[in-house]
Image (cartoon, rainbow, N blue to C red):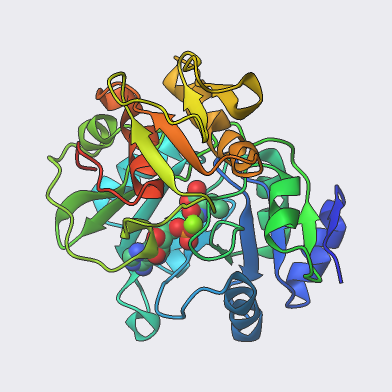
Length: 307
Ligand code: TXA
Ligand code: MG
């Protein structure tokens, strides 16, 4: 068995409705979808990903209006949805049917193919379409590389525009908090909701483990004063003199473009003959918060600036 990459949205919808996992593009990263109302489909998706069942997945819908079937929508969440959905934001909300879990995370992707697909299928649970603990895919070929032997349809929507996973904001118990930083900044979320951010409650979720999003080779955070070993591959703003060009990728100075390319570049460097990957730290400013979070986690060290 090998995955099929294609552009047939009707085929993707047909397979999802028939209970098969299907990979699909969103503007953040590719998702591994399963029809939300089909427990066998959801079980098959967890098995393929290798994700423990205790780790819940985000519900994807075409329109936030559909979320009312699954979640209780407090007023600040309504404001956030009006401002940022469709888009790279996930809201963690109280579940309407707490039997399956007290909370549910809801996202409305903006990617045109994701929109069309979800309009045909209704709610779809989808984690990022990588094997558990690995970096998220931002192109159809990355998904194929993650599941080379799976009977899986991969809907090809090109390279993801945002390139890192959605920001996750929680609206629970009258509080607003960030669970994962993303392209939508925490300060904008707080301002739009009209509420200050509280510290996140201690929710167990794989995105919050330090060693999530890891490439195969060890990843080391570098700064200007760290000497680069010549056995490394490098992602940096200028090429360290002792790293050959074949093992170097230029880091973009614009945080949005950096994020868009980050995972694809880490996958390229992971395929070189280097012993490890060095990543130069981006500036410690809010615009870089999400990208810093992902590289610090990939290196297995906590982010230095919260989030
Ligand atoms: O951009 C994204 O959010 C992508 C695309 C495909 O939409 N999805 C994604 O899903 O990144 P995933 O499962 O790889 O990461 C979602 C994170 C996980 O850490 C998961 O445990 C957490 O959100 N999460 C989902 N539902 C939750 C819940 N009810 N309570 C706490 N954490 C939850
Ligand atoms: Mg993931």
